[in-house]
Image 1 (cartoon, rainbow, N blue to C red):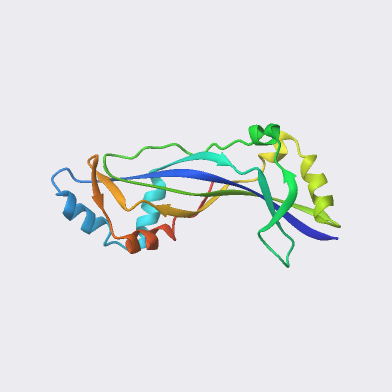
Image 2: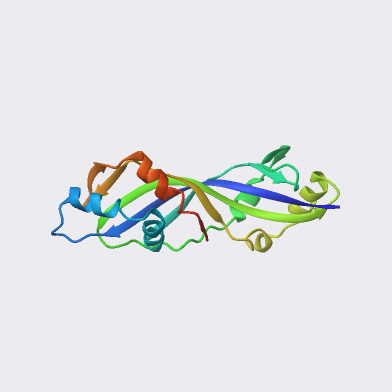
Length: 173
């Protein structure tokens, strides 16, 4: 027997709000905010964030210690299974100022001791709605849009800066 981990994957929309001093010009605010340490800025962003699960993929992937991210062929989540999945993140809006938007991937993992992937799938199929929702969602692979809103007006931010920040935005919900 070995451990098989089955993953459910979904796409998630994200929004982050950062407060600004109304006396600060948008250009100065962008330079100040995005000049901060990416890790510290990401921590502040996570405190004023909203997450929305947009879609759950019907396909599942698995890892078995040797191979990871392998698609499970000929198995699809049923409508009932997808409907039973809950996504209840904190839904907080922050103070007015800068809003960043993007998307990412949400994953849930389920581990089973089994002789094969098929045996692990049988165990997965037997999960109740409560058991399906017992594990946390991990949100990562976040891609931030280059256009940010400052006082609801669009401004461009360097893609490399946003990429460095996004690398610190993973969260478990």
